[in-house]
Length: 298
Image: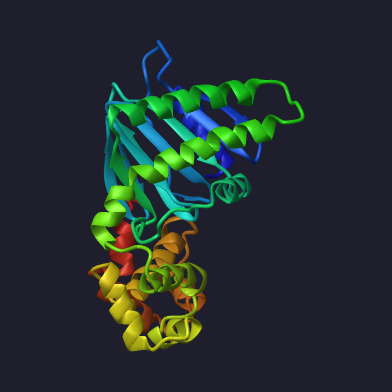
């Protein structure tokens, strides 16, 4: 999340913010006595960091990766890096805590715990889940301890201690969706599941310029037919549908964040012409790029 957005959240939402520059930002408003301002940002922004936001009371209304959603009391929102988001409003009684973890710190933490997020569950780039009371307590405890470390004077092992708390935070957050993962996918230790995960990782890297199933099948040393079969085994979409959704995600980002024209986007995504881009976008979303842009209230 761009620094100016964090500044907006801190100032306009009456939120308290502490940070370790380029490593971690913590935001909350649960300890404040004065009246709360709505949690709101003025525009959609690219979020390079991971955000974990726990709503303790009330609710937040947001648009994430083009989808409007509510995060209610007792729920936690997790957005994967490279998402786009906008806080549109919050209830008058909303209380929240928010962890913003920068990419380098995130990578080191994942290296520590030897696990990562399951992209097949986070197919939209974010997930909202209910917390049981024990998990709520863990989020609050870890937030409190991390705040103490953020404001403490620098010392030799400060980042090591911070990372140990983040280890616990991410393990707790990943465990929150383990049941969902098992319900969606069944056996997650198979070769097919590994292929599907690698397919999604490849889409994240190449979808701006590569739109054929054949390209990804070649990358994974399998046939296009088998790639689509595996995709359907672990989701409700075939390989072609997954490719379309990733391409449109890039297009939406260019519209909402970079404010690029349709002609510029068609060129960036290497469509042969504007008409083919418009048709592709409408086939995937049901609306034209112009209609999507209008829905953003620009």
